[in-house]
Image 1 (tube, rainbow, N blue to C red):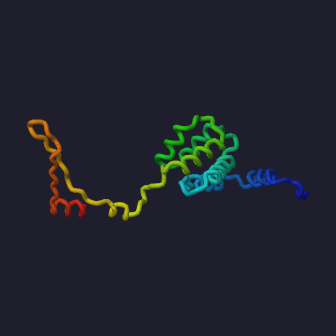
Image 2 (image 1 turned 90 degrees about the vertical axis):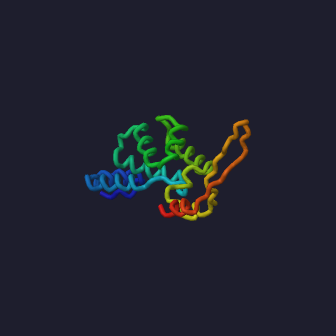
Image 3 (image 1 turned 30 degrees about the vertical axis):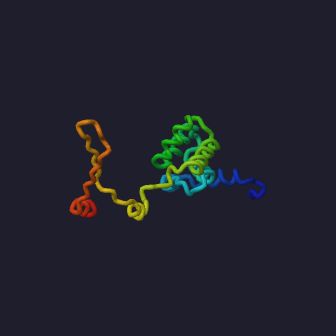
Length: 157
């Protein structure tokens, strides 16, 4: 029997039906977990790819569970901001729009934990400043204590 007239959804269902076993499910689950969202990725492509993987793993998954699994793939502050802007029963398009808005309009997620070390070098050292108050209530006298020994200890840590 030749199936030349069948469309892509039919072939996709046939492939999933034939190759759906424990190893395949484990590999697709690991590919889902390893693909975290970052600001430099296109949110539309990322959400579509991740939702297709979730649909292939579990076709009966409800919308709330899919949204929860998608949001766990968004790291840190960006996940919190997306959760604040959405409810549990959002469609995939609304999640994509929220991610697009946050990626373009805010700088959340741009500064990751893997910052370059040059960021710290650009900050000038200002020393310790202490504000002292006189008994008559005048306060604007600042004393700066910069100890070279203390500064060297700070750099060595």
